[in-house]
Length: 285
Image (cartoon, rainbow, N blue to C red):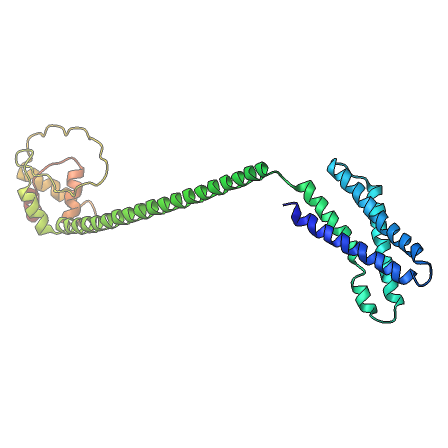
């Protein structure tokens, strides 16, 4: 894995050193003796290489020195400056020489990248552990997503079932209420009619001799027990019944109807069968 960064850095360093030495020899060789030009070129390359070697030694020890780093970058910039100056001085192919003037700085940058790689590199064991942790986290996330999706689907199914059950209950209650309403309306119609009321009272079981209770509609909802009725006394004679009917009928002006008279008759605590009461009404009216 280290070869991926160190080999490009080494190759770039070699090319930049050879190029710098060649430029110095060609440029300064015409003005000074070639040994002097050689010494200058080797000095630039040697300083660059010496600082690089020292930096690599410090990096191997886990240390870092800013002064050495600054000196190394200074030699790299000097080499690039020489190449740029040579490119500007030549009359032909100036653009080509400028195109390769960045090689010393590029080589320094590659060694910087390699140093960063080394400082952040991990052993295969650590990498395997990291991959295992990442895989475990992905597995847990996938399981959690699957669990959430399953719970959401279950909740949706439950809500759908509850909603459908509630709708069925509501429909049954609506039909039941409609049926009860129709039955209640029928009972109220039967109760309101005089002829049907008389017929129903005629078939009602007698609770006292010669007395038939008034037929009432059933009561919906809770009921409270009432006190037992007092024992009935002796029945009224026809004359007494006629007098009571006459008295109640003329309590208001105009005279009360039969239904109002019968209600007030029974509200006063009197008792008489519907047949006798209606017969007394006919005699009085």
